[in-house]
Every structure is written in structure tokens, then in C-alpha cells.
Image 1 (cartoon, each protein chain N blue to C red):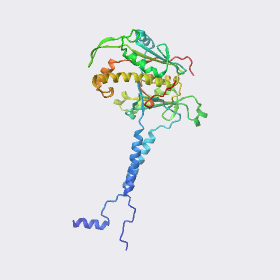
Image 2 (cartoon, rainbow over the protein chains, first blue to last red):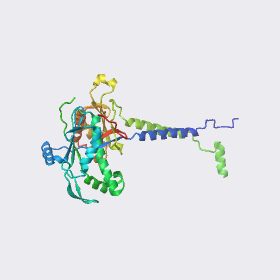
Image 3 (cartoon, helix red, strand yellow):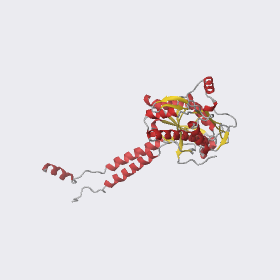
Image 4 (spheres, rainbow over the protein chains, first blue to last red):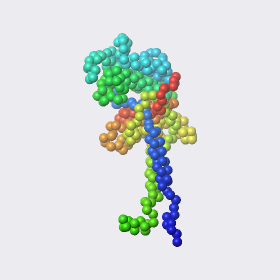
Length: 194
Length: 161
């Protein structure tokens, strides 16, 4: 008469192995998070209206960045390397010496800062050709965003001693108002596409 | 005490049978494996994302719709050519289809989330801007204004030109 009724392999470690696999899959699938440059497209507008808006902005308040089909960079009429773009953009946003050819500053009341002189009308205009390579376009966008982020971070560190990303929403809005240089994208030129 | 003894004595073993535990866990495992694979779109194009330093993490993947642009895979180039194409979900589409695609994607979201909808553009770095610009214009028409240029996060940008 057989005394042992249960005649099976101990399956307890099996559960451990399965759990290990489960955790492995959970971790690896969440690790692959997407990153990207966050941008906002302008809403559709009447073409006539857009033109009248453009005319109102004075020459000195626009930083014109053009990328042609050969991926060359033209900023304010000068051919530059992509490495120089960030510093030029930062100088444009900051205008530290109130230069004549950089954005005009107007006194404005901003929460947290009081009355400060800001370049309210500054705009960065990015124009690309149909033939521009996407990788270069992204590199240019990246540099423009880097300049903006650095300027904001510097101001935030000066004022509150912490980076921009840690600020409260109201503080962020104040910083955005202080350095408000939107990146505007013109309709690209068709010349030299393909 | 004696009551218990009588019962366990009959069963022969004094512990819970854990043999079904691995089955449950394996079931969970397979569930997660299939779900995560199902979410990914089967790519029919080659997408080598550009590098960038300023990329922000996509917080809520459920709010994002994906548009892929790039050359068809080598094995598909005989049928579809080597010109960059747009892929929405699982099929090659034209710029005109984006309007419908966005409307469809918007439908799948809750009403409260529809304003937060985001379109992630996964575009090959060697693509010419023409098709990208057309897509952006279509997105503006579809009123999907929050976009994200997907990229590979890097510490420093290697020089391009």
C-alpha cells in the first residue's frame, strides 16, 4: 500500500521563476519611454491676416533663421555653423547691452519680478526649404529650444535658486512672460526642393 | 483541534497546494507580453530618429497618436518605391488621410482628454522637409496642434554640418 499519495515535483520555485520573468518584462517595456521636442503648431489662419501680423513686427525684433536645401544655416544674413546658433539666440533673447539691432525692451509689470524691461515683441522666425533634411531641421529646433531653456533656467536659478522645471505653474508663467520669444515658422520656400 | 486533525489527516498533506500558482503567474506574464507587443505598430518603414538634447519625456502614452515617416523597408521598396512615405497605424497613407486619422484617434479618447491629445512625429532624419511640412499643415487643418518631434535623447549633439 503506497503511503505517499502526492507524487509530484515541488512547483514552488516555478512561481518564483515566472514572477522574475514577469517583472523583467514589466521593467523593460516601461523603460522604453518616448522622448521628443514638444512644440505647438499655430492654428490655421486667414492668409491675409497673417501678413498684416508680420508687418507689425519691427525688423530688430525678429531673429531670422533660414535653413536651405544644402542644410546651410543663415542667421540674420550671415552663414553660420550650427554650434554658434545657441549663443546667438541667447544673446537675441537676452539683449544684455540694449543693443540697437537686438529686440526693443519695453517696461512691463510681471508677477514676482515687478516692473522689468522685457523684449515683448521678440520673435524667432525659422524658415526652412522643402529640400532641407529633417535631421538638420531638428538640430536647429533643438538649439533654439536649448537657448530658450537655458535662459529660463538662468533666470529661475537667480530668482528662486532652482531650475525652471521645479517651479510652480505661476512662477513658470512669470518666467515665460519675462523671456517670451516664440519660435514662429514661416511657410517654407519651394525653391530647390527634391 | 481534533476536528482539524481529522480533516487534514484525510487529505494527507498539511499545506496548500501551490502547483497552480505558476500557472496564474504565467498567465499574467503572457498577458503583459502580448499587450505590450500589440501596442507597437508593425513598422513598414525605416525610422532612424534624429538626436536631440532638449527632448521631454512623453508622459502619457495613451494620449499620443503616432505618425511615422520614412523610406519603406528594403523588402517593400520593390512595391512601394524608395520615396519617403507616411505610415498611420499599420498602413501606408497619404497626407490627405491625416485629417480622418486624427478625427478617428480623437474619438478613442475621453472628452476630457481630447484637448490634451498629442501627435508624436516619428520621422527618419534623412527625410526631406517637404513631406514633413505637408504633414504639419494637415495637422493644423485637423486642429491637432500639440506635436512632438520624437528623437533619441543624447547629452551632446554631434555636429551635423
